[in-house]
Amino acid sequence: MKRLFLQLATAVLFFSFLSCKKENSENKKTLNKLYEMFKDGSISICQYNGQTVYTAAINAYDAGGGIFDKNGNLIGNCNYAWGSKPDPICGQVTNCKIIYMVKDNIWGQPATNLFKLGQKPHF
Image (cartoon, rainbow, N blue to C red; front, side, top):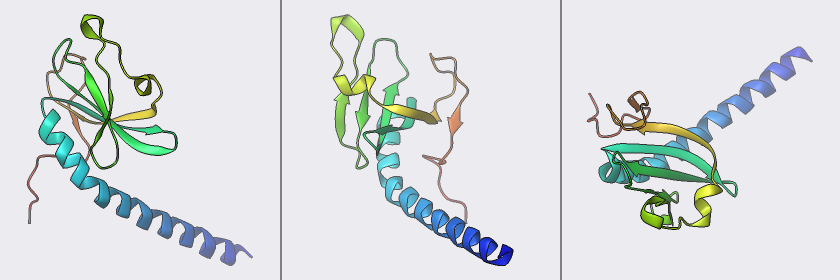
């Protein structure tokens, strides 16, 4: 029984790892696209209605930010400055995790680059 449990647990972990790799490779194109637009800012990965979305902002006061779908398409404008009204989705994203943060940013956060965005692969 213990052996069967270990085999089952190993299989579950293996297939979970494969699905994460697939998602990461599919999202790499989107992350690179967002990095090119927000390399002087921040990018976070979040959830919205069970879907992966990204929030991104430029490292500047009153610059606002946006929410992007898994393909990098803008789905929400989150500009709070100068009396602008942000899109409702801006307050509805959850479980956000910073995956990229420029050094010396206005938010006082440490520089982060979890997916090594903008770095050339070393062979």
